[in-house]
Image 1 (cartoon, rainbow, N blue to C red):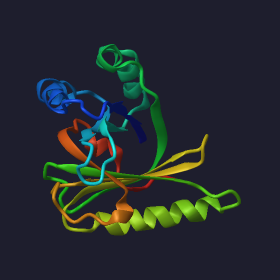
Image 2 (cartoon, rainbow, N blue to C red):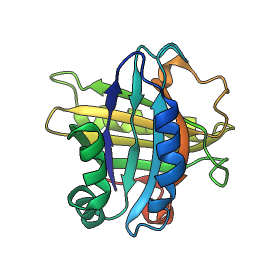
Image 3 (cartoon, helix red, strand yellow):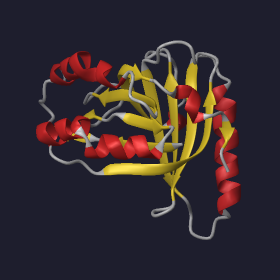
Image 4 (tube, rainbow, N blue to C red):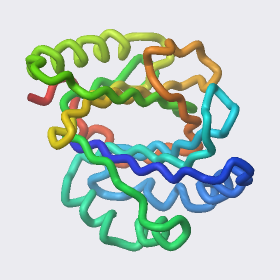
Length: 197
């Protein structure tokens, strides 16, 4: 499993209805994309749920790395580059994925929490603790799925959680909150479940 995200930060006065319409008209195009575990078409609006910015920030979980490569080099990503410029694409190795009790429902929000691993920390211990915390979170009502992934270049750990109810009380420790406008999940079964190391 591979996790991937790019974030397009938009002007403070940007009409976020443009992003909603973009996803409404084009989101379905990846609903059958082979090798894509899921794509959460996320956005956040300045002043909503504590967001300091307007941002379009889709989050991907890839079951097949070749599918990720096809996407980045293909027409879908060309459209992003054409409309917004070429964004930095963050990428992490998937370490843990767990479907939650609401895995069959449509998620309306996701949270993303990133942390840099401290110098000198025992990596296996830190990752195991993060996976155990996400495992516990994954059993909570309203959780669609929970993920832990690692960027070993920057030694950054990411926790990603999909929530079914956008208005639910999400613990602040879950991280930045994004509205999910659409979910494409053609190969979600290919992501597996549990620890992946």
